[in-house]
Amino acid sequence: MRILALDIGEKRIGLAVSDALNITAQGLETLRRTSAEDTLKKIRALIKEYDVSKIVIGMPFNMDGTEGPSARAAGEFAAILRKDTGVTVEMVDERLTSAQGERMLLEADISRKKRKRAIDKIAAQLILQTYLESHVQKDSSR
Figure 1 (cartoon, rainbow, N blue to C red):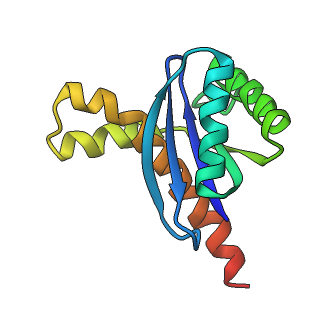
Figure 2 (cartoon, rainbow, N blue to C red; figure 1 turned 90 degrees about the vertical axis):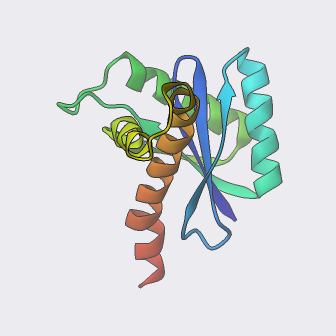
């Protein structure tokens, strides 16, 4: 059973999935947000395709730890996903993942146009890898 990570933005959702052993995160694609039903349909298809048992969603807290509009929107989307899919959904602090992903892409000398397309997927991958390192791998060492 794999874990799916979502980096939710206003226009796009970055996606990443764990390997079967929940050790590494692989970036998938970036979904362009259209209708809520279409977005949910695509996520349900990914859950089935990758045999997903859990979803982690990046929670974009403000730097002072408070919830702003983006964090509230992510929380609302998580509630919809829980109800719609029946899959466990966890929120993960994602502060700085987009900035970290942007730095990685800059260091790799990726063009601005390609960075814009890749940043959401990279952020989802960073969210998932951080989650795996702090939760799943720790649990397996017990």
